[in-house]
Length: 298
Image (cartoon, rainbow, N blue to C red; front, side, top):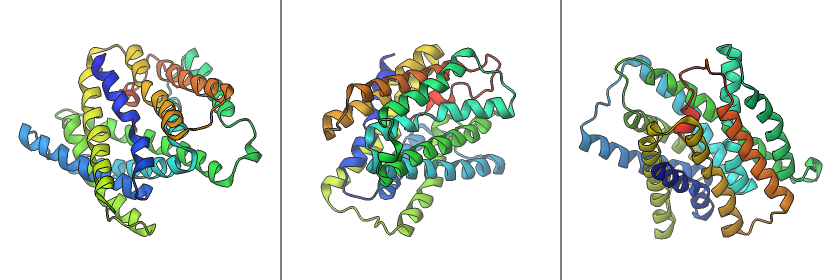
């Protein structure tokens, strides 16, 4: 429980780093993966873990890397448009996309908790945005759609990565994450340049923040979660990992003075609860991806 709590807390600072660093959102995503990939590769070499994989696994990893790069790009851009809290909260709605895929493709039968979670999530988001969609700025609306688009891309990434993990002789989660990092790095770098964002780190402060971002969110937070997750039941793990969007919303209020009414706070709490119910409310006869939405976070 302590490891999961610490891991979720570390990852909750991801949008804070993106907000503070003096580089574009795509550039921040690039350096998260670049610095994180170097650290992960060093750990693999020290542990002498196998990193070779068949062409089928590499092909899936390539496609998964594209969707993960899209997720990171959407997520980082949405932070600037709607703030760290709301972007993280909406990004965690990937659980609903995963469940929808299970229902449509694998013919899973959703539990009553999942069916109840959908309208609760909609109501929660409605309360957060104030119920006045027409009154929102165009940039804020784009940020909401980017966050939800990132959630879809992240769910697709999890589905793709779940397939090679289920095979006999599969690589370790650490090796898989390292491969994904190095597939994603050139995609994010090229995307950053196409958007006109320089990959140059402007100053020492920004370099330190980017290194801390990669170390905390991409390496240490994930490592703590992966170590603690196998020893907890699904419901307790899901509840603990909801610290990530909840704390991200809190950091947005504390660090960036996000104006938040009681109604918006209630909406955030309701959305977090709906995400938890959606995670726990899937069919007992679901796919091997049952806990993938819990194993990896933003």
